[in-house]
Image (cartoon, rainbow, N blue to C red; front, top):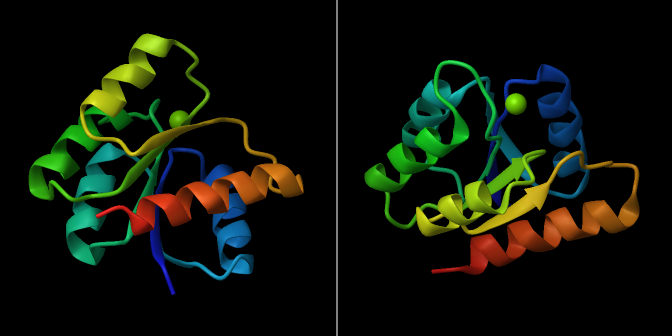
Length: 127
Ligand SMILES: [Mg+2]
C-alpha cells in the first residue's frame, strides 16, 4: 500500500483528499497544515509520495519543497495548487517536484480522480 502525506492549509481539502485516497487504496500517513509541519512529517513518516499545496501560512509549498528535497533528494512530491502562473510551476519542477496538479480537484469526478491516482502511481514508480 502506497503511503501518502498530504500538506495543505485547508482542513476541508485535506479531509476530502484523504477520504478519496483511502477509497483508492492509498494509506494517508498524516495531513500537515503548513510547510513547517510538512517538512517535519516528511522526516517522521518518509512517505512514498507527498501532495503539496503551494499557498500556505508559516512556510509555503515552494520553501517546503526545497527543504524536503534537501533532506531527501529522492523525495517524490506532487504540487497541488490553484496557482496558474507557469513561472511558479516551472520553479517547483526545477527544484525537484515530480509534477503539478491544478486545483480544485473534484474528487467526485472520476476522470480527475483517475488523473490524481495515475500521477501518484507515476511518482511512486519513479526512482
Ligand atoms: Mg493553500
